[in-house]
Length: 341
Image (cartoon, rainbow, N blue to C red; front, side, top):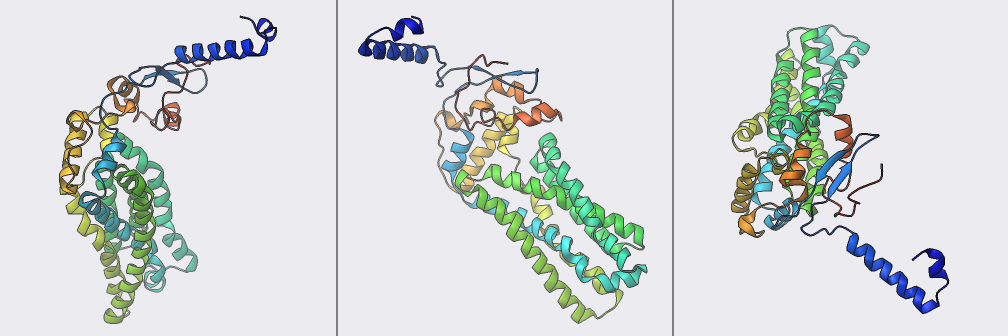
């Protein structure tokens, strides 16, 4: 019925016709439960087709919430925090060493400032590419690589025989530390219950970093007091500031888990389910979520995973699409199955 014909009806009939029209729209709208509408996301004229399905069981976030905060997250938090303490110490250690480093390498104030700020250039590059490395090869690989770089080049700073090797070691130390920040935050976020995520991440990146600067100051004062003004004390300080990362690195090599989010996105559901069972055993929670505790997330079902298989391809459009609420699983199936271009 046209709008002109509706306007000519009495008031009660107009209400009845409007209600019928709304009911008809509801019947034509795609249902969320059990439906598999094709969602199109894209930039410009290019669009990709994504398929969402609803499987039985809890979502990944639901399993993490049900498993709670326990010894599993405590161990992961301790490992990430120790490495972040070492990163904080290495970022600030050179501020105590102006006189001995300048005397060792024959630097004036400008030269020392340039060498001292070299680590921040490395940190900038590491921060830019750490997340990409984690998306391509996994959070575990990226975390181990960043921690290893931090340890190796921090010790190289202590052993550097001349200026250029010292400056190169500081740049590469910053590279490892810069990559460490986004990777450690992502790993903690993806293993934490939803209500604890901001606390876990901000405590690691903020508090642990600050503890590292305090640790460096205390260690520097003690070493200078007991070793005097010789050339050995400042080199020893670089070694001491690396100790927290040196302690955590072998433990991470043996026990650091991969992110379940990364595994599911890359189609490794069996490995993710095994990690979920391990999480529940360590935290002392029972199996939850229906059929064998399987993870059911719309974004991780087979049809949808085909689209996400390009996650590590450095596609700019693909990268921008991660901000769509439907892709991230935040928003239910409210999009039109045939969106307008």
